[in-house]
Image 1 (cartoon, rainbow, N blue to C red):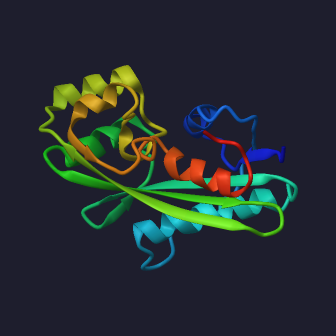
Image 2 (image 1 turned 120 degrees about the vertical axis):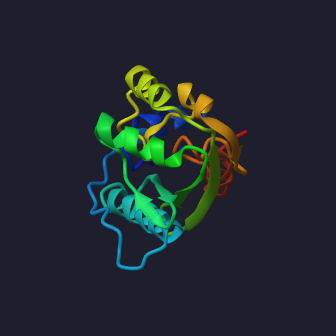
Amino acid sequence: MKPVVLASSSRYRAKLLQRLQLPFACHAPNIDETPLQGESPAALAMRLSVKKAQAVAATQPEAIVIGSDQVCAFEGQVLGKPGSAEAAFLQLQAFANKRTEFFTGLCVLAPGGQQWQHVDQTTVHFRALSAAEIERYIELEQPLDCAGGFKVESLGIGLFEAVESKDPTALVGLPLIQLSAFMRHAGLAVP
């Protein structure tokens, strides 16, 4: 079997990839993630996914390399990971009673130059949130390293009225439905 490498240091993506029960290694791609002037959130997610996969594939040419990136877009602005409780609070406070878009890019590179790409769009509808609810959530979950400032796979699900997506794993950071298809195209046995 060809080796599989996840071009990421994200523990969330690694945990998702474990679901496919394929042995894999993780390598941080160390790329510049600065958005380009006028770049759409979907284009940014796709470009960064490709760059991550290419950076790792350059050092692992015999491997099937998976690159993924997620971009949060709110009212026309790209938002990064909050990084602090204060920033997470401000993001979640702004999201209350509104919708936010998440674009999760996926790129799979196989030895020999084969490449598959996909961008998943997920719309999250937040419910009304009080300051006390937001503070309690941040204190309990510490979602400071998550796009949007929440963890949908945990307590964060209680912040929403609805989630619209073709793949529920995309919001966590790695669209496994599309990834499974790409891995089958690359010759791996994925149920």
